[in-house]
Length: 213
Image (cartoon, rainbow, N blue to C red; front, side):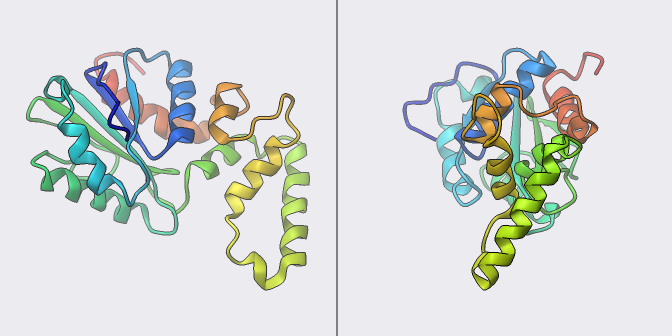
């Protein structure tokens, strides 16, 4: 999070990076949810130091809805969820009791969503890949990655397969999008796919609780 950030809304969605900002900008536009400010709070290792900066920004006392989006990565989702809950409580804020619930205390609604689905290990990339896996070209993506891994042998162990598949899939789109977030803005992920149901419901429950889904 940069010091020059100014709060422009009373509804804040904190995400892990610029790519995620672009992705959720597109998803929120698709869902037709207005008035949400998306803030890059940094990766999982930065949330602990960046969150105090966020809550001390001018206007934060007016915030009435705050959401966090984080990747589970190699850990279970519950571990990532507990980490954010600890940071919230350490800074004097309430936290949801369970994953996939919204806390509504101290005049602020707070929700946490752990990618890809609040259960499995993984990341936003996995959700995007799931939305396009039925496209014919995706078989070519799988074959290409498998071939690369065979050629790399031991050197391929540290490759992030999901990120590699994202870049491979996007390399044949026209015009090319060089990142997951830009691809979302260009409409390259199928937001109508059922795999996005949970995250769309989370955004609805947190930011538009009085409206029908």
